[in-house]
Image (cartoon, rainbow, N blue to C red; front, side):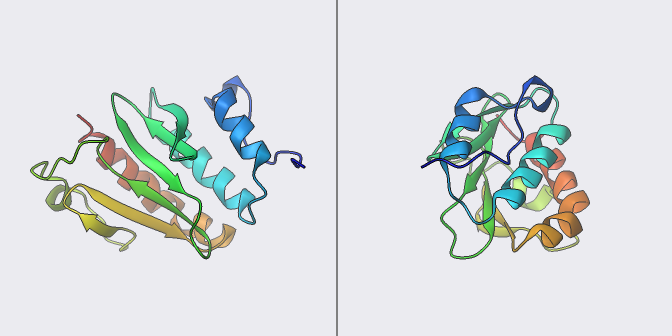
Length: 140
């Protein structure tokens, strides 16, 4: 039975009904963390669109650039990418500044950022927003 959603909803959030519906149906132990990370991304990127990809919230400008990985064994992860097609020569890895070490590189054009709990999201919020701003500059 779906529980009452604790997630961002409504036009002010820039969220989409399909994402709100998906999240309302989840019984995820990290609902507060997912909501907090969604808010960071939606507030950081001008013109961002939120959709469902891989059965999770995904964010796009011209292409998708960030998608939640909600099946992590603990906490949550956000997969940062440059759309569906690999962009190995993007120069992304060399250009994105990550002085706090949030990024776990999975390839030249893909990385993940993990969050253990709400305190971890709050502690990493500013650095994560800076990475997102840099990342979307490379979205094709």
